[in-house]
Image (cartoon, rainbow, N blue to C red):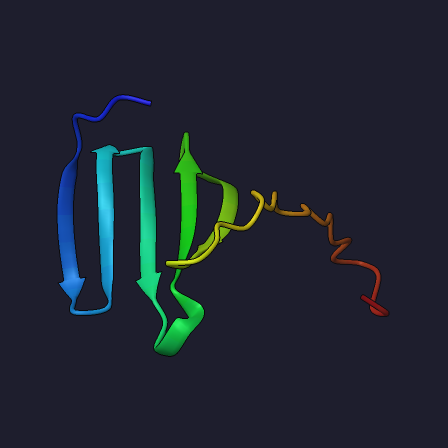
Length: 75
């Protein structure tokens, strides 16, 4: 990925790495040793999420897209 991005600070615990309208990362810092949660969006869709800490980086977790049938009342 290109390192030419803008950083948009939302507050002291949250910021966005912005490449363009459809490609960005949302970084949310957690308190204590939890580090941060990172959500990567490409083409406007969630591609993966990851937990990052000073001592480790978790594997990339891809979202599970679930189709919901609006006529099925048991969902």
